[in-house]
Length: 450
Image 1: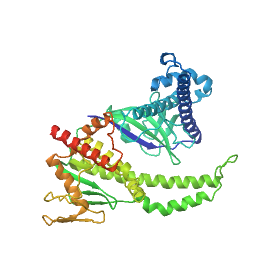
Image 2: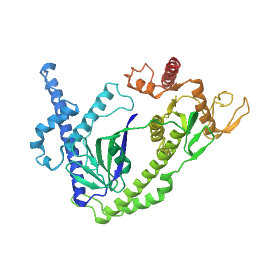
Image 3: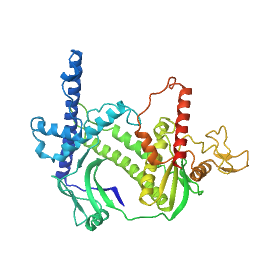
Image 4: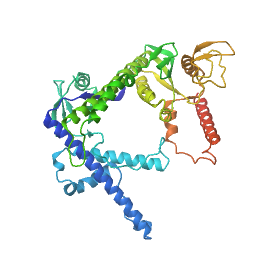
């Protein structure tokens, strides 16, 4: 089984290599902004011509918004627009054009209602404060045999902070192939991420026929239908004191201002704050990877909820804790790791009353406030923790195959064009009716599959 995996390594570059990194990332940003200015000028020109009464066939033709078309236009203009372009690899400018092509495609798909999710705005220019990154798809991209160095086009050989044996073994055996490399900076550290095609051996979970329901929460990161409660590490809450101290220290230093550079102490304070934030992100990522790997290697079927995380974080009382838990990332990791390990992931419809339904007799309550942390069934008398009851309901749904939405079906549904909302859809009653229709359509689709 072939899978696409990414291997990320921290780099230990020399000072001249850091300058080359910054130059390549700056070249990518310049190409992006330059081509975006051309696209906007082209659209403004066509709009002005329409105001003069010029017919459609006589208008200035559109620029080609594909990555190939933007790169071809850039190559025709680079000598006059950026005479210094030879200082960097051509891949730096190609990655800027590819990023702009993706942004324009997302905007056009959102405008034509062909792209699900939140509306996408027109691409904006990248500032100097934007995240530094640059991708390479051709040229000398390799992992050296000493397992302590990697090579990138034009930049040369760079030492890594960690051993690259895991990727090097695949490359040496011929079971791996590097597709691209992305150079990026997080905080004050540089990383390289190799996107590779890996030949995976077939795997099977330890309990291939076992079904586990996973209910995500804040007090407990996850509650399993087996009765296991996984506590929330709360990495951000534990580090808030250190973050506030670093933020106050940075505020007391002389930062950048028009006509003056920031002081050396401000730069050191900013580096300390960035290091603290990076440590929190790494701790969260480590905890999520350990949890999802254990679940994927143990259970054959994992059932999770289709949570509206983007909508939940709009609640200012819960936004910080939800973001710190990383629910969206946890679901993403479970989905692909289950497939890698020979299991499957089932996503339950978000409108299922898993918390209000008794996992023993199936009786549903009309109301259940968030303050009630223990579920008490008035029909059969069962008393159970609220989250554990929801997790068991998720596991039970697989056996009945009702109200489930498989990942493949969900992907197909998301790709369908949005229909025009009926009259009154902006009201509360209209929204409830729309949710009811969506739930009914999901049920019908799953029953037809079963």
